[in-house]
Image (tube, rainbow, N blue to C red; front, side, top):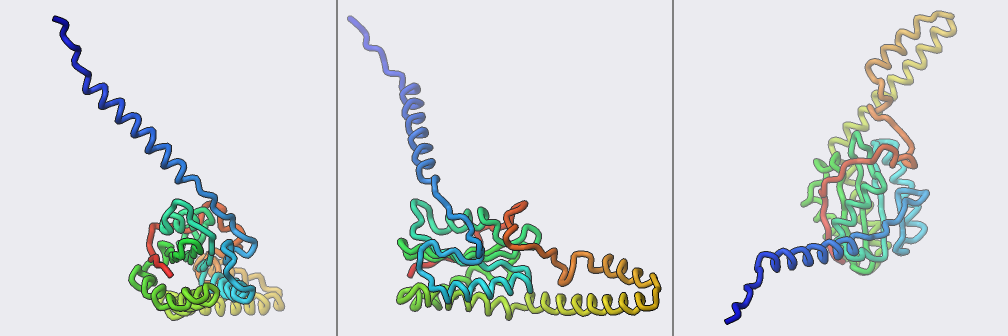
Length: 249
C-alpha cells in the first residue's frame, strides 16, 4: 500500500505570506507615488485647483508677506484638483514638509489645503503654533466657513484665511512678539542716533554701544533671524507633527 505524502503546511504558509507581503508592498508603492506641486514664485498661495480670483490671491500674498516680516510666521494657502489615493491629512503634512513652510527654529508655519475633487479641507499647524491653534479651535474655524465654502470656494477660502489671520493678530504670543519687535526697533534707532552723535565728534567710543547691542540682541530686531521666504527650503522648514483639523464642504 502506497502511503500519501503529507503536505508541508509550514512551507505553504510561508509561501502565502510572502506572496501577500509582496502584493501589499506593491500596492503601497503605487498609492505612494503622488506628484506634489512645487511652490510658486508667490510661495504664499498656490492655486493649482484654479478656484481663487486674482483679488483673493493678491489679498493672501500681501497679508502673508506682512505677517512674515512682522512675526516670522508663514501662512500658506494651496488648492489642488485631487488628493489621488492619499488622505488629506497625509497629503497636507507631506506638502508642508516638502515646501519647507515655517522656520526650522521657530516652527511657525500654517498650511491651508483645499482639494476640489474630494471637497476636503485641511488646516495643518506647525509645531510652534500649536499652542495658539489647537485642534478644537481649528475645527471651529472650518465649521464657521462651511456655508461659504459650499457656495463659493473663492469666498469661503478668503473668509477662512481672514479668520486665521485675525486670530494670529489677537493671540497673546503674537502681541508680545510685536511689542518685542517695537522695543528692539526703538533700541536700534536709538543706537543709530548715538553712532551719528559720536561720529560727528569723531569719537570711536560709540562702537561700545554697537557691541553691547549685538551681545543683547544679536539675532536682530524682534529676536528673529530674518530670511527671504524664497529660501525657506534651505536646510528644511518648520516641524509639522500632524496638528490641525480637517473637514468636508
